[in-house]
Length: 95
Image (cartoon, rainbow, N blue to C red; front, top):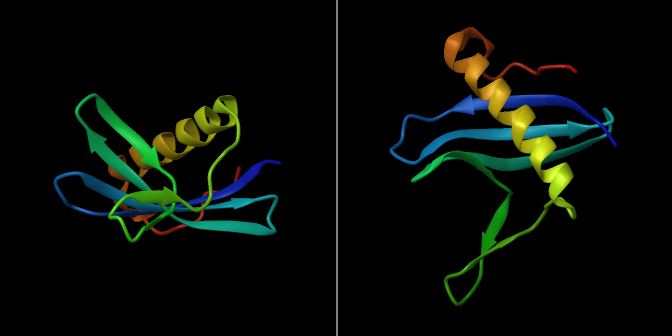
């Protein structure tokens, strides 16, 4: 399974820096990932929903850490390119 497209939509909030959609193999899209500014730098949150007890649970996520790191690296790379060139915002980035 390969990531074939990443779409970044910047946000100008204290912690939320961008919403992200990723496409796998040109046939499956996951929407609602987030780029977050944490205490130790930027990281990617998977799409989640709020539970009745107030906690959040991922609704889509990688099973192994190696694939999670690959996704996060590709998303943060595209995020930095969009910051450098805002015209890329919202445009698909084929790989």
